[in-house]
Structure formats: C-alpha cells, structure tokens
Length: 263
Image 1 (spheres, rainbow, N blue to C red):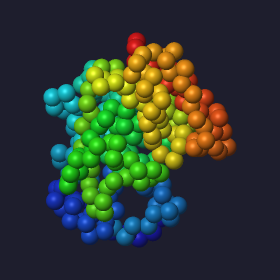
Image 2 (image 1 turned 135 degrees about the vertical axis):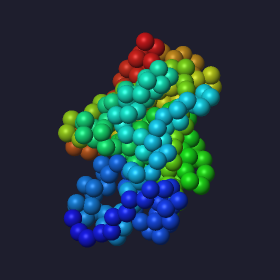
Image 3 (image 1 turned 120 degrees about the horizontal axis):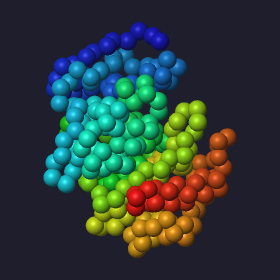
Image 4 (image 1 turned 90 degrees about the vertical axis):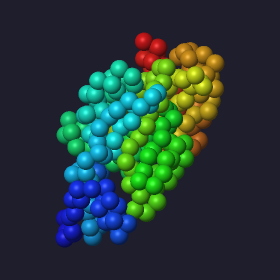
C-alpha cells in the first residue's frame, strides 16, 4: 500500500464535498482495496461511506423495492421482503463471492464499479431498475455503458436503487470456480410489458438480448429460449471459455432461469 488520507464522513453532504474535491469513494471496498494493493488505483483521499446513516436499508415503495446503496450483499440475501417479492434478487445476492465478500460488499459499490462479470448489473437491467444518485434518477438501460463504465459523473454518489417487482424472475449463473464471478450469468424477468433478459460475464459489459426477450415475451418457457440462436461474434473469449461456448451457455442458462422462474 502507500500513504493516502482516509476520511469517514458522517453525512451525505460531507461525503459530497469530499467526492467533488476529488476524493475516491469507498463503498464495500471488495474491488478497490485489491486494486490499491496492486497500485492499479492510487487515490490521494479515500472517502468511506460506511458511517452515513440512511444509505443502507430496504423498503417497499408501491410496486418497487428500494435498496440503499450501502446495503451489504448478505443483508439483501437475508431480507424477508426481498425473499418474498423478488426472490431471484435474494438468491443472486446470496451467490456473490464468498461469505466474507457478502458481509462487506455493497449493492452501490457493485453497481458503480460495473465489473463486466458482476451479478447485480444483470438484475438491474432485467428488472428495469432505476439508480438514484445525489443528483438524479438514471434508468438501468442508460446507466451501464460498457466495461467498468457508467453514466455517473465525477463526484456523483449512488444513494439507492429501486427495483420494480416482477411477475416472475430468476438468475442462473455458471461460475468461474476461482473468482466466483459469472463466466456467464443470465437474469430473466417477466412483467406485464413482456420479458427482459440481461446477460453478464459474456461480453464487454452487461447487455440485454433482444431475440431471447422477443421469444420469451411470446412464450415464457425454456423451449422458447432454446429456439433462439445466440450470435457469438461479439462475446468474450479467454482461457476459461471460447466465444462459441459462451454463446451456448447463454442459451442453457436462460433456459434454466426460465424453468426456475416458472417453479
């Protein structure tokens, strides 16, 4: 590590001032601390949000579940309202990393970091969630902009995420065994406006699949998903899986997720 200034503001207003002055915001730290150890990030000032009341918690608001940005993964997984209203989201949170990561990692930190193999971005995109910041509300479709890139402006802080409650939803993840990130993860959701399918781990960032959504909007069944060809040309290829294998896994994981959502 190296010398840096550590700030732990007690209010959102104080955190805003520090962030706007160039401080690097720390949420759960599960990515940032590792990056700092490797000198991939070297902030002069670290702004820890953990002491700010009101940034953590879960509540129902009409047909939405609103989850505070500093809510830990395990708290999402264990929450009774999440389990009842969006059980797929609870299951997703319970499958992130290991026990230590779930105890420290936060929803807002994961969303802001936007790792191309992270789980939460697929839930936001498939459920049509809205990211709330200290400045505005951003639809998930507009928020994620490629590998580690988001619509957040300099110094802008995520305060919460609101998730519309779907009719049905499920998440199926094929894990990379060492990191436990998604080699391919598929979140499917059905609502009155049709089906949405979001894929993580397979491309440059989380993305929706129009062909699968069209087929599942007509018939929300594994058979409908199986009939959709998945183009591999823009998918990732690495030592873990080829483009073709990832395309195959998108189809398989979508079928599994739909089956699970249908009970």
